Length: 420
Figure (spheres, rainbow, N blue to C red):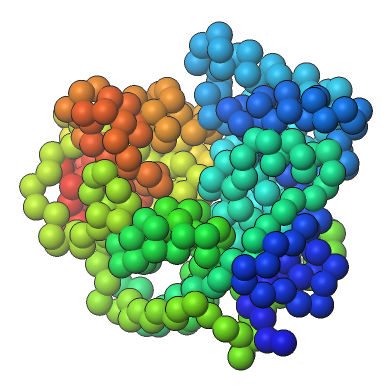
């Protein structure tokens, strides 16, 4: 029986030869993830189950990244719950402030994500890890608790949509623009509970960072997961990060897809998602005159080293507009240190940026960049819902790092080509 990637991974982890969409399966999980917002709830539910130990102390990852460094007493108490539980359970993969990063940048960097695995996380953007060929998806805190106790999770086998990208990417166009194009095309519920499989020569040309950006935003189309088949670039990324064995899965030529969509990217321009949904996309040439108050570069979507390099390329020798606040959030401490070593951080600060330790911060309207009423921000983050970055009367526009950096210089949303 021909199967897609997601079907093969679910079959292998549920001890079956094959599965088909719509079936309910119980599957073994390879990693369970929680953060400082979701894990405390899961830990309380875990304690109600009545078991003393997690199923495998090496397969639980706790990352305090949302309201950390702690912004208030409540967030400090939340983080302490993680810290105490990690000590009690002797968890190998607890990442303290100063060594942690934004979870979906950190786990791949640490070699905790491998092709063919099932990873569940109490965070919707866990789907990021599909860029390495893993079935990764967000779950609720109660499902996280059950998985910590049992090492299993239940799934309804999803249908698969395939997105085929052909052509060479134009200047200033990257993974963020590809996924915004898709979301603008199918809508925020266009892939509801479906696996989104991304393929084609354009995807093959992308770095792992670009692929992670695409997989990260699969959830913004309603996707259960976003998958990219592993290749030599994947294997090279994993070299030196992990010594664990893993299995690569590929969709069969005769596999059944719910839908196949094809795109020629050769004429694609940078995309901007207007408030208040990621599907409200327009090409940069159709944006018009939109002044901004804040530019945010970073997050689990675009906080990787190549994103900071791209922003620095735009900002080198230039200054942010006098009426724009420019905030930069490296995805991990390692990314931060490498950016320091390359002079990227100095370039950003010289341009007038405030550079933060890794944190989710303003992405969820948490801290370190919350918007006031009537303010507008352009951001490399993944969501622009009403009130997402602060006041419900503020506005967030989503774009790639080059557009965000150029807009910070111009004081309005603008194409990088107009600045460089």
